[in-house]
Length: 123
Image (spheres, rainbow, N blue to C red):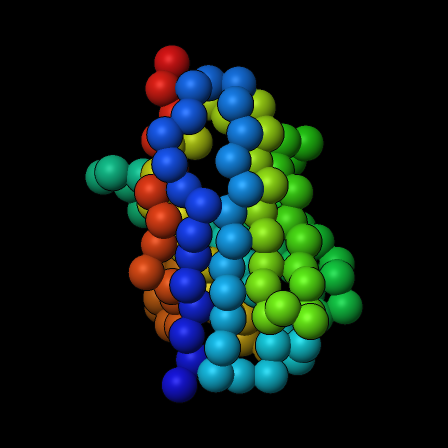
């Protein structure tokens, strides 16, 4: 059974930092891309970052230059370092198994997502 467990969320002031972790199990971690999505209250889920099996990274414009994604295949874990946080980054953050080694499924499918971790950025 595919499982993804996010951690590291919390309350932080604008300008602060958080590091999210996504611990994966139930599949061959090295073979899959992993993505981070977020969903703010009343809004559709937004894909913000992903990393392929070979370490190629992608960032949405809204987070580029502030967030860094990385993976540790020995620990079956993906990280999202979030710096210079803004109130508009407030959301529930989810990690998701990719469709394959390079691509993600559309967010509306919500297949093999974790339970989410809350991030609140105060102004």
